Length: 191
Image 1 (cartoon, helix red, strand yellow):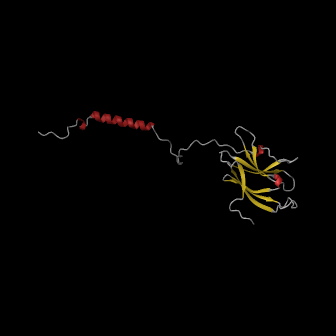
Image 2 (cartoon, one colour):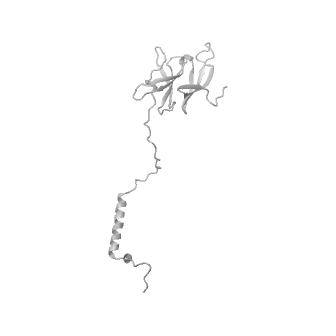
């Protein structure tokens, strides 16, 4: 008699105990999967893991600031404001166009940069971009891409009435080397 190359396996014949063991194993897997369910489905895509986001810091409120502006018996009026991170430190600054609340005429504007230290309630003026003593009116004012842009209306001489500025010049300020540097915005054409 010749022996087979593979010995006879004892478990190749199915017996009732094998069926009971298989049924028990399958039941265990089903019970385990019912406990480990995936989260509920949403239409939103999952967010990629990111670094912890810094706490959002509110920009300084110019209504709480004291501006270096002598208005006599009238109040300083914040005409326009815009916020942005001008120095790249992750905290927004506020730029404000401010003038005296005069009842007549066109009072000159001041253009100020405000910052606020953590834990302080009052913002402080850290830069004067346009001094009211220069008799300029600020129009077309914006804060974009870490730059302040504006159109400045002024006067060619002291004989020009303050109601009617006759000089128009674009300006841009950017934080460079620890100071705001004024330049003419790119793409500007004079008329």
